[in-house]
Length: 364
Ligand code: ATP
Image 1 (cartoon, rainbow, N blue to C red):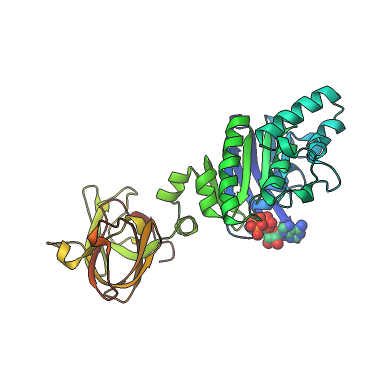
Image 2 (cartoon, helix red, strand yellow; image 1 turned 90 degrees about the horizontal axis):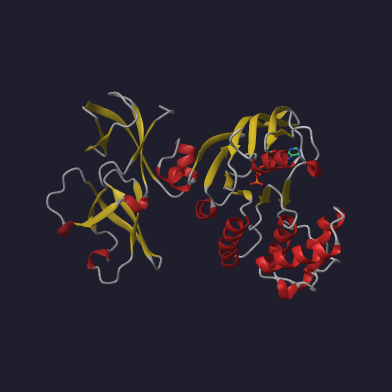
């Protein structure tokens, strides 16, 4: 088998309700894989099934080719870092980290060497005699990770491990975690409902919805080529237009938005009259002042409804002719006079051909 973990047709019910529905997934050796999805979609349940804290109704889980479906958590070579960290409050940092090794009857000399090594790695060497309550949230999290990785598991499972940290600490811990994972070479499976966190940290992202996996891909793939509207909406902000294909010529489709004709490559072999959703990311939209352009073929006319200055970017809300609002993001450059818009100003909006994502409109 190819992956370090192979999940084969896994299903799980709670109180007759199907929580995971026939899930199959390969986790590659050494990767940082993130399970991402809205609250209640089954991320934690999937993690608990992998760790063995929960048992499945059907399906199989293999870890390094060994069928572990019926094994206890202790018999699986995985370790979980819980959201609450679950540190022993009465033990020092050193003893918290040493605990698993003591249970496995590792020699005192080896325990000392391994714990000191791992504490240095998570930059907590100076804190080894402290108790958990004498540490910050970020430091406690590092102890929890050190305690897990000192046992050298094949896979580390992290359940919303950063969610209790404030924004700044969270960002620095994201970098820290990624660094640690590279350094250790251990496979990490990380659960979050924060899409930015998933994009920043993962080698691959698994997007889940209602107990199903709807897409697996690199951050770039899921961002640029969402599998469907749910995946697209879940990752980043988006402008979604509904349309229908007017015409197919050679390898191009022609469609209209607000009565303006646009065209792009026919990558999905669509046919005339197919209902479609046209997806354009705010940062892919270009907004032009009236004086900037001539001609304005294939551009959508509108007026500036709101200008939101965000430091490195300027967010524009543009009202199209139909009254519909769309979102555009431009990188802020104080030397660029064309970036200064006034509310009510007339503008033109377009995007580069083929930068839009076309999805067949399944609701039509
Ligand atoms: P969140 O992001 O909010 O943690 P999640 O995607 O991790 O959500 P799960 O915790 O896996 O979701 O829960 C999926 C569904 O299963 C939810 O509807 C939840 O209420 C239900 N569920 C989870 N554990 C149990 C349980 N032990 N008994 C009954 N229902 C449960």
